[in-house]
Length: 230
Ligand SMILES: [Zn+2]
Image 1 (cartoon, protein in one colour):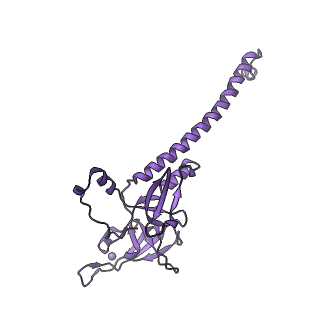
Image 2 (cartoon, helix red, strand yellow):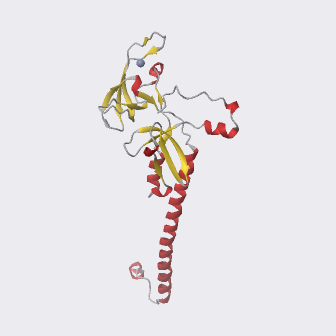
Image 3 (cartoon, rainbow, N blue to C red):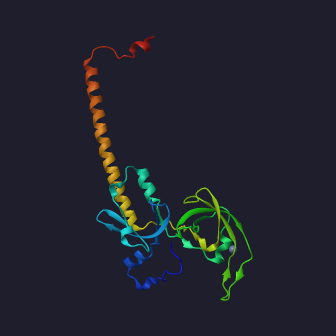
């Protein structure tokens, strides 16, 4: 999660082209297979592997994925979908942009005090007139009813306030390191599957070839000849 206020303004002119390109990639979040919650992460390559480092967590929480970890393209696609541009904390003055059906990433105060974010859909907004705080900023007190797609309240509806909600970003650009890793994993997957298919196909070819040979050597009429004559 990004709180939206901490990201520095980037002055492109101060960066070389490469640096600017790197800086332009959106921060990413990752849905951990451990608990299916979304976390802000950094990624880097370690040989062929992809290391996922959870922002604010020590490195012993890092998850390391090898391109050989995936049995089929469904598993790989599922992994790919665990990454996306970081959702951003909703601001009070963005209240009007949320309506029935808006996809959000939100948290629900847990007994354990854990703040975990899961995907949900806005099903209703009970609007209240916004007030203004002493600094003149708009304050939203509206009550959002969320239907949870994931997490401990999956398939249930709970109430949320503006502070519990992050907005899912439309940015579909994938982090280049993740792209490289996915490519390598795909190459391994298809390379091996292709080899497997070839071997299987070669076996079939052998059978077919030998069948043709024995058929040609066999002077008798094909089995279905009799049926067709009837
Ligand atoms: Zn509001």
